[in-house]
Length: 419
Image 1: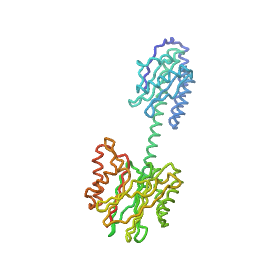
Image 2: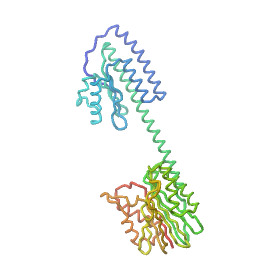
Image 3: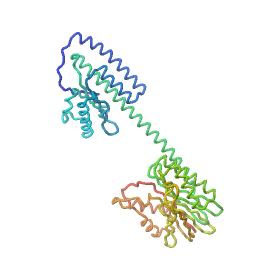
Image 4: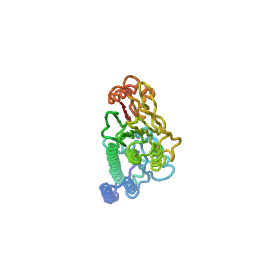
């Protein structure tokens, strides 16, 4: 409840006229209380509540001055200030600065408030300071009228401020529910983008690992059979997180799958894919992308790297970075200097694909894990390990490197072993 701090003011003596006046005032006050209650029950907005409050202060209470300060979104705000003269405006700005600097109002430390106002009314709810109301202009109708009017102002202020707080709580709750619903939808959508199972046969085996930074990440990988002996694998990272990133990646995957059916050369496929992404994003978002197409009969690997951290092909401790390609997809209407890569898959051979969540992870010294540590790991006697164990071992090394530092991006691994 509000408890007012009074700046001393001489009250008028009681009289019969004043008592009659107060009876009329109480009837009017009851009308306003009913109107405020009605507004709260019908979920009036905060601005509508403030409009009613200001009308009460002027028409019913006939106060000569008032200023309402309200704590919202982590800082104090001046919601109302009257009259609009320079002195009141300047004082209100000083009070606001004091509140945001001190956290709460200290009437002993800030005594200038009495230059304009008479009464300070703090508003608390469940031990939280919600608002401060500064008012002036009491006492002109006698002692009883002044005291009763002060109680009425305190009551109205409490009702309005708590109603505003409930409105804000409700709005925040609705936003949280909407965000949770959006995240759940994006998570379900993302699950549909990645393959449920990865193949293992006499020619190769595939293993993947995906750890999103938040509930919804921006990474994507895929593996598809596109011919009798032809297969395609890819890995991508879309700028952003949440539903926008999930929707963009879903659109990207749908376009990729449609273009793969056309059996286009990789350069033409990438050019058309970039064209479609640019029309969709207008250059405001981009996707890093690596795609490889191989044939188990010829053992030829054709690939294109669109600004993605280069996968590494390893055979007999000899590394080959798969970095031929161009820049990000969706950034420019046409990709510059496109170059398709080609190599023969060794037997045995290992390809490790990863996103920048691996190499950009940092330790307490702000040092990145980097590609050199990935290379060191690949040549540490792990090449014959089961693919799942390779992923586990690399992630353990990454965790040891980061120590207590959290990861700030999605982590995705896609590894292929050729026999």
